[in-house]
Image 1 (cartoon, helix red, strand yellow):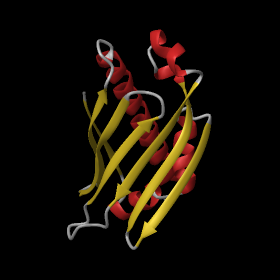
Image 2 (tube, one colour):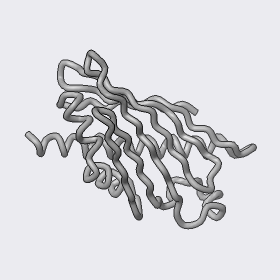
Image 3 (tube, one colour):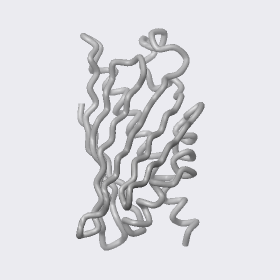
Length: 165
């Protein structure tokens, strides 16, 4: 199942990239998304950076009929690998979300592109669940969770950028 989202930020690409590569911002985002525990590692390689977040998430997003199969929490690993800026200032990343013990895979890309008012971050990806008969509801729950996390990132990102002015 496909997912897509866009966030418009009133700041340039490099300012937003610095925010996305901030441990404080990532941990605030995960806490606001409901994480019970979070561990974040940020590796920089010149202008490229990779953010790896491991989080223990509540099972509230899992359809009720499947919660007994996954326990009280989910161990989630999110990797966002950002490339250096292109000549036009655009940045791209690949993202992968793995949920331990759940047959769901989230993969996609992110893009930060300059706009007249700042920049836009776009998400595009695919959620796949390898559960016969029940894959579709599980995929929908995962897409709904991605949407919630993007909404949290939008809200916190705009707050963060407003506080920096």
